[in-house]
Length: 125
Image (cartoon, rainbow, N blue to C red):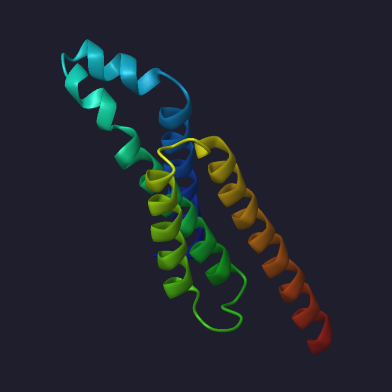
């Protein structure tokens, strides 16, 4: 799978998870299907899905930048698990802040990777 497909799938997963986490859309759909008992447990699946999707985006950005440095896969897995466990431990009190912080961290990582790529290409010239 190339970096464009991986990036696109990670972004789509992040957007879907964010919409389902922060709007009542999924609650209405689940209740409409007669599965209201699952509504209380949705956050335990949606937030880790959001963080995992952001991790896929971060990995795709690393591949797109030409794989500078060591593979960030282990750090991404640890970050996803840590953020998920942190939210569970805090009982989702700071869910919005933590989610926005994770998204900003991925955006800054992508910016940093693009700056490194620009610097490396300038040095090659």
